[in-house]
Length: 191
Image (cartoon, rainbow, N blue to C red):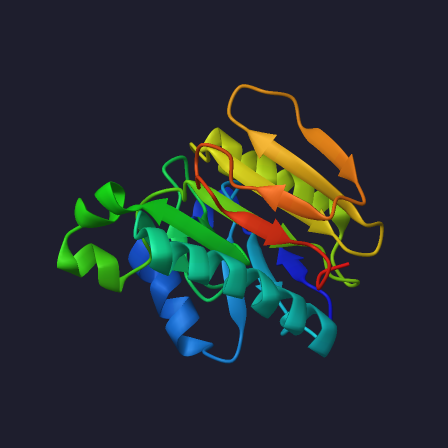
């Protein structure tokens, strides 16, 4: 269960429509396109990672339904980032105002924006450096808050705009800060 990155020559840059065609023709694959034009083929997750993702969805989902401040998304949602690339974070969220600003047609396709919040969970088959690069890509595209959770090391990296990455060792929970006010992610089911 590893991801494979295919290097695409710059002369073969995909348009949004061409990338959608590739995704549609390969429905059994989970594909991302990096801002450098790399096609990333990701395998399905194993049971432990799938369960950890679900536990994170629950906390964000309950908080979101209670507060109704935005829209939450699972790992099958693609985001067309402003500076290039199409990514699918494990968990993501955008403010309701940004969702409401999208046209009905835009909502049906890869969303043409960077989420306000993302969680990336490092599975046993993931390369930590690749996942950290992905988090920096989100930050460079306007992400306000991101959590990179590494269950194997019981470590969390917190990404914020215009700040150094904060690293926490064995936290029991995480706060949504001012981006997701009142959200608390319980890390006990994750670690």
